[in-house]
Image (cartoon, one colour):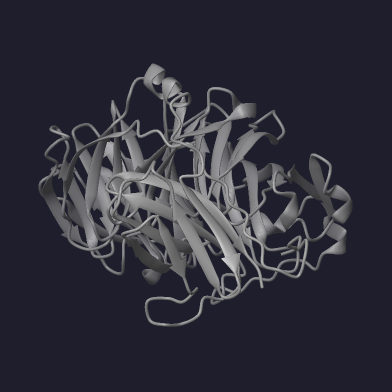
Length: 468
């Protein structure tokens, strides 16, 4: 990472984002285990946890209630629904689990499948299309594995696609964050960066260290969208590929594009791909006959987890804090319009009707009402006061100043770029001096951190870059 230093003194870059709390909390319920992902079908939410699959009755969003539960081997991660079955990835068991949900109050485990896939992460199911059968796509260290789910109770392997076998001659992506461009200085003032693959060593494959792994998959018609992470010598990063799956036994690459940073989750609608990654959120267009191209992007702090689409808004979970709301009505000028603090942070999320449902880690499951599009649009002109949290560095301390926009007492949360909590500072006064040590007394390492000041449900994000 290349950081621009203007003098020998430490530098803090602080940016405060307008906040409008458009989402309205409706209800919550506790769940057994740590909640990872959620999918909606009718009046039920299906939530994967580290101990099994939970079925939550959401017919009354203000009072969601645990309706059914089945323990699963290993730990539940991402999930998908098809027919009368739930498919739950299980990284620890190198498999995905199939659960019969014909009776939501009494889900029944059918068993584990895909033992030869390697460690498994993303999963998505798609209806039959243009002569091919209904498919379940699984993202694993080996690549994307396709299963015929004509009988969803008994998936049968149909084919596989190894993304790093199809290395494009080059990749490109927009560069909105020029201070991080360390490989191509000449691209600093241009809209694209370009790295020839022939200058790179082919990526390595090692399940134990996840040098290459398929993070997430999505099926739309005869196209599979595949996100995979390469930690090899071609440059650590995230890549998006479109794959033709009209013939599941012989899937083939359509196009490929490199993204800016390691990704976390994505959603697809009408050949538009909404990708959340460490540094922000990208909107990419492409399909069976259309090459992939970046339409727009926006910078966001923290460790993103999942993306859900609702009308003209994309909601992005941010662990361990909550949710971002992104206006996507204008792809080239997307706006960060909403921020919602959620106990336990946000993991998986899914939209159903007029509500957004969130898997909240060790805080269970929560439901929020989604405002009409007009309400969200008005939120962009009702920003919180600028610079609700200011910061400066002097010697070995950081001075935070909380403006009158935030009521006291408040809490200042400091995270690294992966969303890991460094420390929490209780603020009873508007000026807080932090000695850059954690609650345990350990000095925080130099680098980039995110400071968020919270008072009740109100949250303001600030990006803090500290050097010494």
